[in-house]
Length: 294
Ligand SMILES: Nc1ncnc2c1ncn2[C@@H]1O[C@H](COP(=O)(O)OS(=O)(=O)O)[C@@H](OP(=O)(O)O)[C@H]1O
Image (cartoon, rainbow, N blue to C red):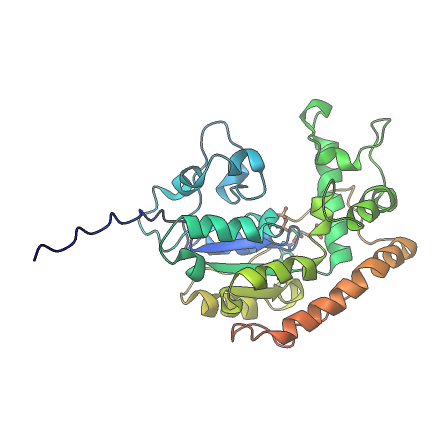
């Protein structure tokens, strides 16, 4: 009997094996710098900014996303071992669905083996760090170089607003809806995002880390990450992407802190419950430590 002709096998497109999905301003640069001692960085293509060698901005930037999987995968085309490839785009956090569908479309069992790492920072401090980042860049950049993202902290008269003004005019409206301007601010609603990730991926694929541990016990955090990834990473976690400018606002006013607490406290409580519910990867901190207020 002539054997039936084998159906042509669907080509598998290798995607990064690890995604550091956020959160923005929670120490992702420090963790990425250390991981890139072992994992291959994404390649930066002509006319792209150099920070794309850490973060590809594929899932969060529609004009890049619509260029397709090959466009994304080609970032690691020169990696001699495709099992050690990392994308550390902190804005991937709100895009669990895109990540799932891209990994499924890329073939093989990649959607079920990709590993996600997420660092969570107390959301008011994270919001302040975001503001400081935007304000610092606005101070340094020429007006023509500022993007819509930077302009979140720019007043109509061109001056840079205070953190109090930023919270009232940008953060609060952004936190009251799920879409529209202020996506970076909505990263702080961790529970909302994690529910999507937990629905679409196995819990064991996602390691949730605490920024407070990065700050106070980085060696322990290193061990958790190495155990999750099943490999040793050379070197050690250090401080990275710190904003020490003279413009830096060190702490929020009591009133602004209260306004933000009124929103984030409930989301944080729901997060702690969510993290208690599903069995986490064994090396994750359980119970997840409550955030330290600024
Ligand atoms: N090792 C270590 N320990 C404690 N804190 C650290 C560490 N490395 C970076 N940082 C602080 O993290 C903030 C920057 O976060 P990210 O690198 O995630 O920012 S970004 O989203 O990539 O722009 C930024 O926070 P702020 O200084 O409060 O703005 C950094 O100072």
